[in-house]
Image 1 (cartoon, rainbow, N blue to C red):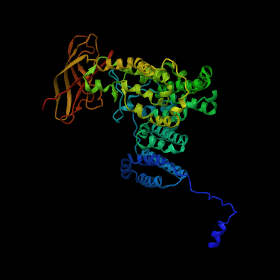
Image 2: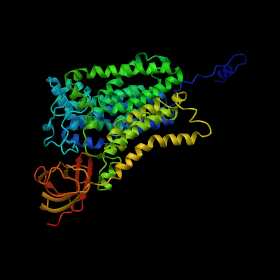
Image 3: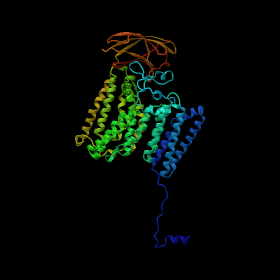
Image 4: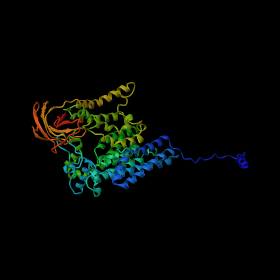
Length: 574
């Protein structure tokens, strides 16, 4: 041993430093992100397992294995030593999430109004019929599928989305009846979109894709409901990842062409991408103009828009040719259908905090004005607002008449994609109009003034809508009911405004809306400044009364102009 030591330290012989074979350790935030994605898979899993244990024991066994995988991945996320090892843990977390999503799909695939409409459109398409402008009221009869009531006193029974979802659902019609084929299509799109996002993100961030798409049981729920927006989300994923680099150097290249085609296909799947596309195109133009100049940037955006428009037209051509008017009305239906107020946005003021408004149209105006104002602000301050391009469009929906949270939730994976791959550094050299006027010693006041100028019309419109007065004053004169049900309701209604109104009556409790009541007695149109008596009957003959103490609201909608009048209904003691 002494000889060996002497030989190793003998003078004149250079010593070689030992080569470390230890793997490069991952950063702590990568470990934490993997752990959070792993933990997020617990959300909602017990409910699925409970259902499976009763009806599908084999599925329950698979879920139990997924529980073991979650536990093991939790340990490995904290103890593995190398980045490659942690990347394998990320992959295991992804596979576990995909497996749980498939198990949930097997158990819960009842669907929604969106899935049954999409599946029926696919069936009519296969049968050679038109899919637009044809009502299918039998889809909603007595099966718990939600209706979309309109201010005209009716319901929307038609398909009101672009045609890509029915086209992709058609090959799956053999899977079953009802909305199951559409649910399978949207769930499959979500799983593929999740894998694509996971693959496109830098390795340390990949578990965030698993968490955002599958972990909170939020996006996957919309997939199981068969929403066409999930298909649009999956198509937008490759568009949004590194989107400021599209057209770099003045060329789209194969990747840019593919991204443009996906953008067009997303716009042919659902209407939400229509609101994102202007922000992406404006941002790409600004970044490319800062790099290449105005003419070259314009050509890039024209080529990008041309490819997207071509993809969109190819998907829509058959429907444009076969039923042009019905197709146009169909894809514009969500914007024009006149659906009643619903959602978690500002409309809650008129729905829950006041007795209504005679200026409901101004919610729609406010939403459009806010969208235009945000787009203008984005163009003016793209260097600052560029990273938020995938979030800004959805702010406008908070002021809309239909402001349900699904419009925000379903696009949240795009927020993640942009946050990771489109940071502020990508926009540092972007072109901004009026850059000189909005800089210098008065930069801050000038920017505040620009923001106030562009957003004030929307805020003023929203204030007009929320502060409107209910045009109808209602007094309950008699109620026919027993302990559990109501069968008749008689009202004295006064039109306090100048316009003649055609009222449509319903009772609500909570946030849902019961179907419209039938008018047995009373004028169809109530002239201004007149009073009339109305006798109402529930649509099924009786209305189930809630427990004592629960608030019952009488709501009256009119369509021209769009108004809402509400009043509390107090039932006399039986």
